[in-house]
Image (cartoon, rainbow, N blue to C red; front, side, top):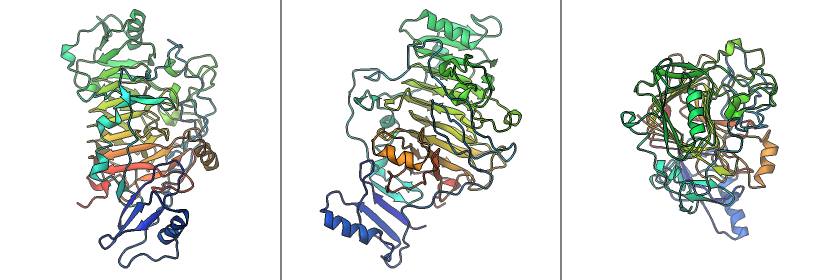
Length: 518
């Protein structure tokens, strides 16, 4: 496909005007005209975009609004509540075996913290410090690549690096505050930690992880408390409530597979009303666990850190009732300044859910040297978070065509998910070009007309993600890696039309799935 470059104009629904510029053969460059008289604007729009205008000799005319990536034949649509109290749904690449999951009859319910219902776990207004007011939003600038696979140039890429993603938090209405948070050193050397509590089958202060966390919460205070977890398997549901003091949960074994926190709840799993799902997302009124409530481990406190641990949801979807929604979260994270180092997050659908308390709040999390595994939308959510130096492994036992990322970033937040210096791999049965890098999760939007109407209000999701300097295996779709949105099936488009353009970009990736020349 011919190279394409264009510049995008800020604004949620503005239609950009373009003109052809002088470029090398087989390249089309679109640049935004920011200030045109209305008449000139209309003429230029017709010249640049009309189907009756032939492209320059030697250049193919690229459709700036390509059709949505067709779903794999084995990936029919689903209707299921993805969590976070959403009324929306996400289309799911359904398993070949077992049958496709159906509608989750249960509401996600209240996310009231059962251990400390008065605390939301959100970012403080000053994001942990005095901070400074955030400057103007970064812009992707002139995009390179193709209409279906846009690439950042070097200048734009500098605005979308780890430290820029994590520099600011707070409220999108009153204004984010920049505290220049830099968590890249990670959690620290566990050998230097002095445990306040120890979890072990024998010889510790507690035999369950939850009991140790509850003890730390009860102790209170503002000093960081350390909980050491002995190697072993802990079959339990765990919640770090929003009111917890700064906690570090860790194992002294550098092999994270040796220290496992695991359970098997899933979204459509029945429960009685009044019975809590994961206490961090209790869903007390629901007849099922809901997506957020299915989480094995929930961390809703600011300043939470974890190292050398595995968070696992080992739901066997084949045993679920026919038509039950089978989203099954291993780790749900909500709270600012969270750090996860050398952790494994394992599941199938919805393994890693990183969220914020509400659409107007920005909270941040940083994952260093992690391993995340799943098949459908298995790294998703509304928060701003970074996966740095990780391995992301796609599974194909349930579906032949999965999706990795599903951000539901609020449109007012310029930073959603950043994946950097990471390796994308798959199991041995994954087909070439079978897996999408991602799709927007149009959280709570129901359908395209609803989404379009909400765009007019200025408060709507438009998932944002950058994948940069990473190695993409042959299972990643090489030409059309971004799929139509979950919930609404809004077609992917890198150019604004009736609704804003998608905000998915790449930079300096390599490997067979990157589409880069070998």
